Image 1 (spheres, rainbow, N blue to C red):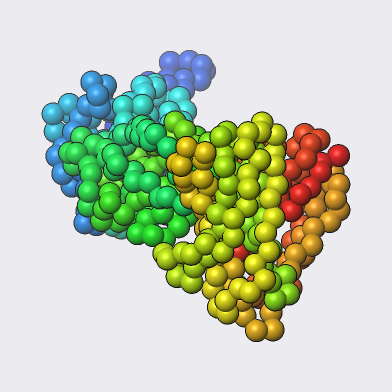
Image 2 (cartoon, helix red, strand yellow):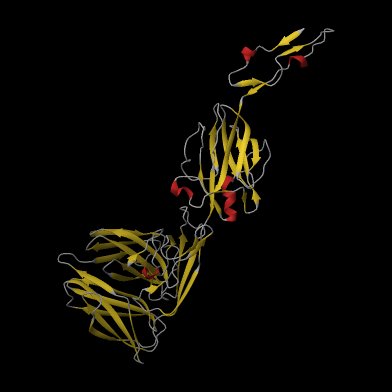
Length: 479
């Protein structure tokens, strides 16, 4: 007898894997199944590509550079994963050329192609990490390319690169399914020490911001950095403009970066990350620590002023005093030139908070700048921060804080002369800032609610309300 597979029954884009005809002799009534077995399979094509050490990433729109087949001494594996989520093909990248090939991929099939330094077997789920396995060696994916002949897409895959890409085959080979990786930059920690924290002084970040990159070399002036964490108890300025969180500084000039600590601050830190030529930031930002060994012999908790009708009420509070003779209150119209308008005797020596008040009955129209000259018995002196009071016709800066005492929240009613950011700072009796919040204020009447105060210990506090032209202090008690 002869049994035969009709070629017309073979599906499109498949081929037979056995002979089309078999002969057999029946010697009994026994059923024999084996001679009737025939095989077919999908037609085959190849999928190939290369892994590149791409130092400039996709800034040029191309995955290129130097071919690489080993990552920090580890082999790199390529996996084809089918629609059920399991590995159906695997190969190892050439250690020298970075090339890989799957010579027997099926036509008209949807795959996911993944690279990893982790080895798994056929039939297993693929490594979950794919390209993230490079991060341990300070490597990161820079781009994934669909290649030529890939029905899943063309050009570079959009979104975040991860050494994973879809491949949909047709009748022809799929080539140049390439991947790019590069090493990430590293930013340098900094430590800067100053002797004295003088109020109103902006201090240089004398070390600058620096770093290095295996591909780009040493970083310094002219490079790009991101400020990833702002200091507490100080303000950071670049080119005399207040730095905001995650601000990117391009063409960095170290002489333009300065820090202005609060009067009572001894240590302030901020963090930054370097940007490399591939467009990637350091994933572990560096820390800049600035310390001041001494503050004023008078530890000034606050210096504030408010417009009260036609006069200006000034108030300042010291946490402690040592050998302090008196305070000279100075006023100016431009923030640079000042003249004395009053002298206030100091307590002299004290380890407890002391409050002082002064009224300026005849402030100038426009902007008034006030500062304290703090003079010791030995003749040494220091200046406080500057308080700015703007006087405009028809509008007064008015505040009200309630309730007082408070528990978990307070309401602040504030009338502003113009749109400005408003900073709320809670300062304890030791001069430490224990809570801060910034909000946007609008010209005219504002009602702000400050929550999350239930975590503060029960104690007296100074609430410092700071705008761009005034600083107001309210005495509060937390129950």
